[in-house]
Length: 265
Image 1 (spheres, helix red, strand yellow):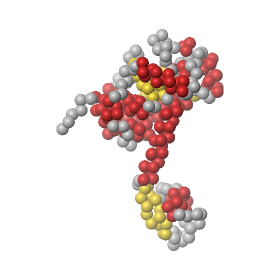
Image 2 (cartoon, helix red, strand yellow; image 1 turned 135 degrees about the horizontal axis):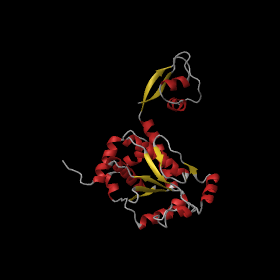
Image 3 (tube, one colour; image 1 turned 180 degrees about the horizontal axis):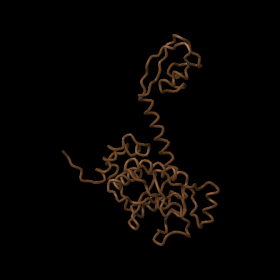
Image 4 (cartoon, helix red, strand yellow; image 1 turned 90 degrees about the vertical axis):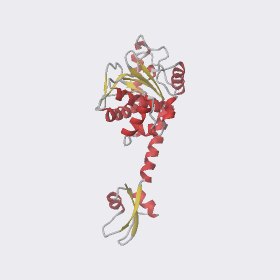
């Protein structure tokens, strides 16, 4: 039996085994083989900063100068507020605002994290005006654009492995750049909104197609009082799907009629 020596690959396989029935976030991870991860790194680099800057310019994002300008962006809807919930907490976040797509990412990641690890995700930073950047912040940081989020590194090795496996897989798809930082221990994540939106939409389509592909078709004899709606409801399908399966042009059916009814397993 071959033993994996690469802890990233081992951790990734553990994620696959424990989260096969989980949300769309990991469906994307499931589509990546371990060899896709081997070339990735969370160490950070000049090339990573370049990609983050290019993404910010490509989205025409403004580097927000001051708290007053940040407030204007919030009022205009360019930034949205993020509130803690049952899946994640905010710690030391002075400005709990990000781009809408980044909020979606936080909600999806934290929900999956809590289910996989049994603890809440902790978000430590979001949008920061240039005038409020910490001393150790990079001069090229994209936090002032609202597209970045920092999350605390857990004390649990299993949880760290989970987060790093997911970040590596998502980085490989080109929807974000992630860096493992040491002071304080956290992960810096720069999300690329347009690629991420396309990625989520594609996953949603694939999930819907999978649901349709898993449907059986049974014969059903129409009884007095039946309608397409109650037949569809009782079999876990939709009226549109029922009409499509039977090539019906309208909703009228009659007692004794034989219908083919999709039943989702």
